[in-house]
Length: 125
Length: 227
Image (tube, rainbow over all chains, first blue to last red; front, side, top):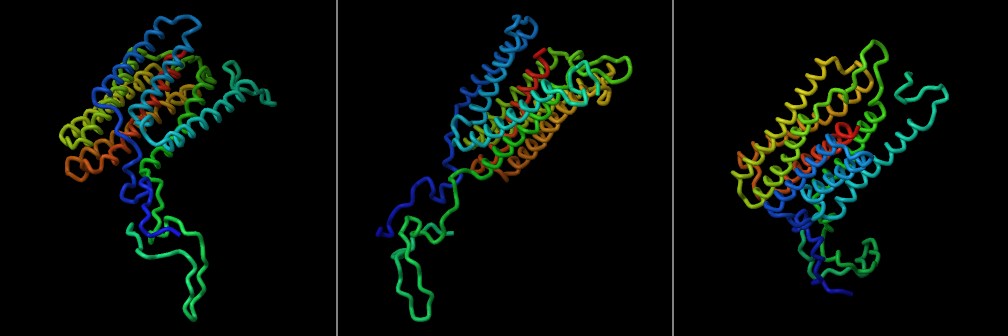
């Protein structure tokens, strides 16, 4: 039987609630460097739009979009430095949204309605 | 609630006094040293709530974006008009407003850094700068909508224009709410209601602001740039 002098683990001590869930991320200069990178990536997107590199246009734009998204979430929203539970809450919603609407999109594009009505550009319902 | 150990307490079976209900013995744990067990994950509940909200809001924008993608090429059902929003996009103009919104995320994190260091004047400056950048973005959106309308692309002209206005309009509403929150936050910091000890509160609003930024990153690429 233990004695009453046992210490409660540090991470669940009430006085520490809400203060130990992250460190404080980058310095101001670090944030400015991240913003400059985002500006460069945005410029690259616009450049690709005006001078499309053929079949690579769409993949490149999608990759740049994902990279910008990831940078903002990781550094500006501090997910890289925060508790993983926050990441799971957000990514869970994001993955659910992508899955649901990908399923919806494919059903609209590839499955024909028995009434002969679909959402392709050339058919009106 | 107290976090003071109840000195000398034990969780083992206790001999009941005459007339008392007998107590059940159970294995002793570290929680027996506290009168109330703190129900905590050690995380900020407000922050966890905001992340949960943002995750759920992905479903809203996912619905709007996928609807637009499905309907973007639909022409009007009647009349000779064949306008689509994509035919009227002014990419240089939208690129500038996208850049302004992107840079507002920088000023937003600088505001959080400033309040965490106790530099309240600098925090207020960055908050106002962020709100102003958001207002510039909204002004650009109003200009874009107005010019589209003058070109003949009303909300009900076609199902694709309805999808476009609904998607970008909902994002604009999110940005507008963010501006209201930022101005309110500025006023609270200005009155001393929020100080460095409540930097976590500021961080909640910051998360929302960055979220509208990342949604625009997706909209800008998927709706405006990808042919």
